[in-house]
Image: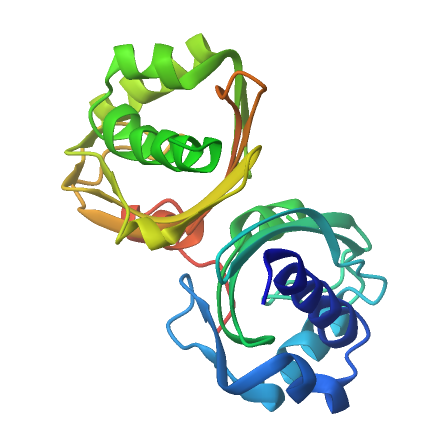
Amino acid sequence: MSIEANKAVVRAYVDAILVNRDFSKFTEFTAPGFYIDRSAVPEAIQGADALHSQMDMLYGAFPDLELKIVDIVAEGDKVVVRFQAPGTHLHPFGGIEGTGRKAVWKGLVMYHVVDGKITEAWANWDDWGLINQLK
Amino acid sequence: MSRIDENKEAVRRFLEEIWSKGDQAAMEEVLAPDFQFILAFAQLDGREAYKNLVIKNHEIFADLTYSLASLDDVVADEQKAAAFWSMSTSNHRGTWRNVPASGEAVAIKGMTFFRFNEAGKMTEARVQNDVLKFMLTIGGVKKMYDI
């Protein structure tokens, strides 16, 4: 797969799975055994159900969350995305009751794409910054 | 060397020579004068401001070291790059962001997204790292989540 094709797979995955949360398409974009390693969190997010509940939790707290790709770089079988996700904090998140505040969650994620499917992702999201915007 | 390989080499030098060793000659070579260093919680404008941060952080954190597990952890094209890295210190020995010296050794991971200008100099580094783990280790936050 070309670098541009790998970028397209990641963009389509973000749109279908992370933004629209259409998990019926999960296996279109991810390989069996897909996981997300969030280095700040001890346990990786493994498989569709775990990611689905994670995303539902996030959109539950920030119903108007807009997960946007603001930059992208790719080489070989890797694609790195810089995300910005503005949203309004209406319901509990990280033990903090809804504040009505607008906050921006930022993150960098490195995806490994093999034969048109994402096999793994290493994510670093700014939990500290997000929580500080809610205090 | 292709521009892509030059950018990867710049990223390696940024972590291993500039951050880990505070090498000022490397800073002049790798960074554009208008280099911006952008953290989740702060932004430094200009190479000089960043240079001062490196010097200050080495005073606060003993044996401050940034490392790549391998060059596979650097992804680059002609204008941009990103890297997945580890950072460690053997002793948090000075006040950092209002948190007094804890004497703790800390190791965290992070990622940085880089941009380069036409001349191949680094103009921007946007950093995401495990600030939360870092703060928990050095006692900068007693309880973040209500568990």
